[in-house]
Amino acid sequence: MDALSDILSVLTVERAAQVRFESRGAYSMRFSGVDHVKFGAVVEGHGRLHAESQSRWIDLAPGDFYLLTDGKPYRTGDPEKVREIDGDTYFAANRDSDGVVRFGDGPPDKIVIGGSVLFDPEGAAWLRSALPPVIHIKGAAPSAAALRTTLGLLAGEVGNVAPGQSIIVDRLTDVLIVQALRAHFADPNVAGASWLAGLADRRIGKALRSFHASVDSVWTVERLAQEAGMSRSSFAAYFRDHVGMSPIDYVARWRLHRVRRAMIETNLPFGAIATRNGYASRASCSQSFKKLFGYSPQEIRTH
Image 1 (cartoon, rainbow, N blue to C red):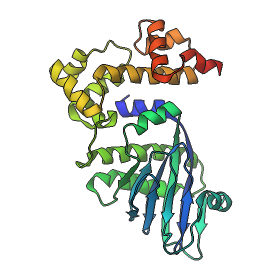
Image 2: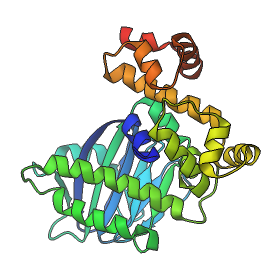
Image 3: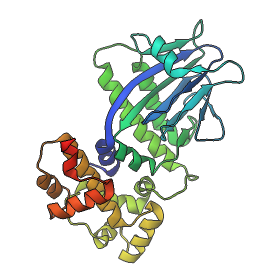
Image 4: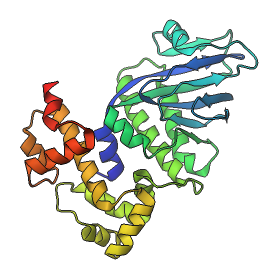
């Protein structure tokens, strides 16, 4: 499994139901914050988006995609033209059996597909540490070509009640988010150290792909540097500059996230889980786990 697939499969808890929003005319809605990563994609028309953690509104055009990562409230529409209403209440009361929410009279002049992905608290913190509160990818950007194709497929499924629709929508949602992250880090203006930025880097990414493909192996700075084709000292400094932590800190943190997920989702003994994730000792794994998360691995299964 490649690094990003490994990370997202471990962090993801569930996907909330996707929705298709068709509207005509001006509207203004505010949505409350939830502990989800929200996404939206404009299929037709133009719109506006404002996340409360940001100072400015974002203009959205056909094909544009956005990802809201901080779980804070956000607004859509145009409050300067019409009175703002509660979006959560409106969507709950006006969602049809086909998964479509409609606003206004007549054929729609705007269509947006949205949804969310729920992560466990520790997984959400790991992901949010690597992403800005808002990611906006313009549909016209060269890096968004694959995203546009997936969006077209998703637009044909959400709101279309047909056999296997929920499975197709879930899979396309996974693809859409991964493609959005790729497009985001393909932007040369994206700056800042994070583990996602490390995955996007040619040399660090090569080392991390090797690590994620064999997490239980013995990993040292020297071995990671060899995978990257760099000297030990150059790799260590380069890694910290691009990822924001040392190579061994990354290895330890990711192993512990995998341990936590296995403790939640399986009945395997803790010792077996620790071994499968590269720990020679149950005690050292348990101590490191409690230091990172603030509770012992055994407490997961007793609460």
